[in-house]
Image (tube, rainbow, N blue to C red; front, side, top):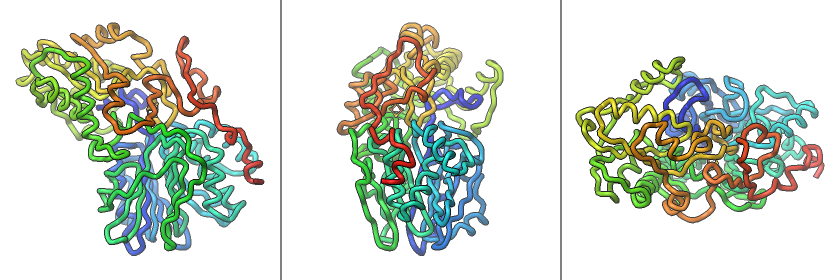
Length: 498
Ligand code: SF4
């Protein structure tokens, strides 16, 4: 679980965003989007937005804050139409604040579109400069606005949104799962590696379609899961039906494995895997790989709990609740001193002393980023009388920065890149410490084709030197599995002419 300090010191990788789109004539599409955004709130808490297309224009309401604070009944009443788009944001590329909130609106000439994006575009600086040279104005410095302006620009040139999206996809490099609306249609598309998830759902009785970052958002609006949107595919949905086009060739699939480890809600299904079941398996595997003698297994709420259950099943050590989590502590709590930070941890999490006192504990968490949370947890459990504290993590050591939509893009932040296992054990003051192996993790999910870059440094999409500058520690050489595609070196002007 993340413990919030000042922004940027959260001791867990932070997901960039959640996306939802719906086309359903006659339904209250804005309110359905609002429900779906609630289901996706775990993917971003900085800002939220909803856009709706009413057949003649597109309206957007967005602001900083949680979903239930951003929208009023009056907003819902104003956002009418057959098609809507929603977004929750945790920004990783570009500015914060209202300007960074999505959906982004583009009104180049006659073309009005709104776009919502999950991921990070690693070549957006160069594309932004080219668009500025072409006289295209920007409201923010985000990568997502660059995609919006590019689509608007190419759409105006070609008079076809699908062509605008296709040309844009040819230029973008990095991770993107996007949904877009104009006044009457919904579009959804995914990068050629399929790094970030995006699924298609259908409402009961064929009343409409929706797309979402996770299946839990489909559940929230009573839609059933149809399929994952394919890497490089564009879907268009409107009164003519659903049309699929492979806009650019798919490359080797590298879906983010961290969705299974931590980001996704446990009731979501990714590529056929129940996230909860995958996490239980990770706990079982961890118990096989790193057994320990202990009296109790406890999980760090919430994301460590399924793996703790699995660890208990395989080890035979009883699983119990070791903590009470306070669900009402907001994100903006600022902890300027060490003393206040420790109080902050206690505000969020309190150990059950009567359960813990005198016991040898195995404590399961999903992942370790900076290590500060683990240190505080061990300290808290020892203070509560634990006889031994054995830390186990249901994922491998996070040693490499992520450039595909997660905020861990500087290697010096990552404790496992800076210290040996034994040094970390001593620093967090645990009796023992172990992580799940990469092989073990991959054995808990279905099929092949996962991004594991933050564990092994093998990057599926080449990181441009300008983007990577200063992000790696000395002695760490990332391994690019693929050089950037030739098309990514093409200019905006050349692409417009083709
Ligand atoms: S580097 Fe890690 S967090 Fe980033 S996309 Fe790959 S697996 Fe996910």
